[in-house]
Length: 73
Image (tube, rainbow, N blue to C red; front, side, top):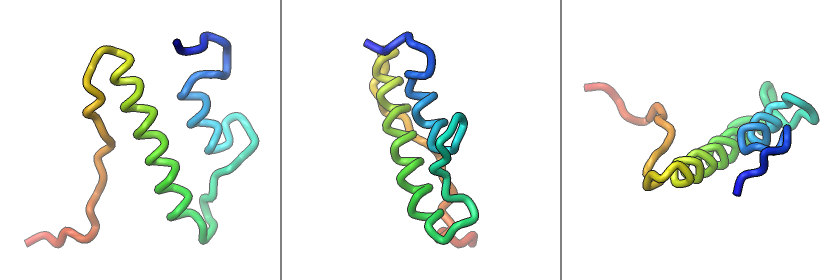
């Protein structure tokens, strides 16, 4: 069961990676940003799937992304 204590939700956990509230783990403006952000989004998507299942759905949900390798014809 999910905790109802303030500051213990999955949203709070994911938001804390961006430094709200601290500590700040965000890598914006650094050369490590691409790898850090991929893992951050993967973790966020897993939390989203878990929440979807907790609401009685199948967890078949994901984040849309822009495929920069797909060249328009």
